[in-house]
Length: 103
Image (cartoon, rainbow, N blue to C red; front, side, top):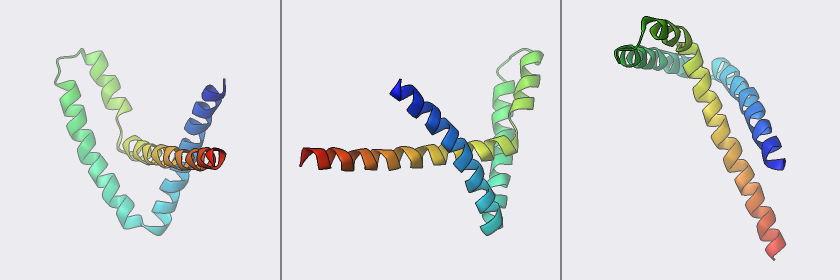
């Protein structure tokens, strides 16, 4: 049960911190965020072109075009970055506690 709660907390905090990181980047480094958004646009075009050229049904292509958006890719990148930072932070804390118990 503890692992489930840790996973849910990780997802919740990574979404929250991802949104906070996105907002702080927009405030303090708008040119960086603009560059990331431009690159996400290029990635979206390439990704949609690749996925729709696989010979899938038109009904699937509509959903691919609808679900893959520039803003979603940027936010997803911030959330993934925050998940990595959260994992590294908790790994460091657990290692410190394990070392203290072992001493």
